[in-house]
Image 1 (cartoon, rainbow, N blue to C red):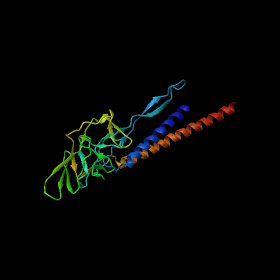
Image 2: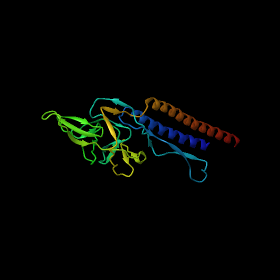
Image 3: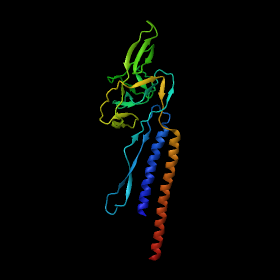
Length: 248
């Protein structure tokens, strides 16, 4: 009975952790460029005398579903959607270079190109891209940001910077608690000039709300099953104790 209780307890804990991961994905169903988190579990034996038949469940390294999300047209110049694979390079909250698929960009208070949550977009040299005021801005397919003055000589285009795009091996990426990706080596990824973007489009989250809700229901039922198994183990133990007391 202790084996049943141990297995059911670990199963319930795993379902609890799984529910938290599904809820996190569901909360980001509307986050631009969000990549769904995936979690896997594996059974491990309990090491110790008298416990070779006991096992517990351990969570393996949390993974990421890199499937592209749906595109929607916005018409904003600074809404950029990457075609296929690749990432925008930004300066993370820790000051290190990090990578995101969120292409909802804007001009920050200092005039630098930023993401909506205030992270600075960097060029191929790792420096911010300054957007001049009183200019019409265009963003090319290769990430080149150009400015055309609204006064003075018309149709005079000036390149003000080029967004750094990277396309490292997805297996070499680590996902931080801030939702940004970084290389496991801790070094900046090399720029990839083959990555292309479309201005006026925005990539949505690749989380399916229907699948996430269905998964939450299934995980909830599995959790209830594990709890009932623990209750059954407790009832069996109580019954056995009563039988032993009567026989004594």
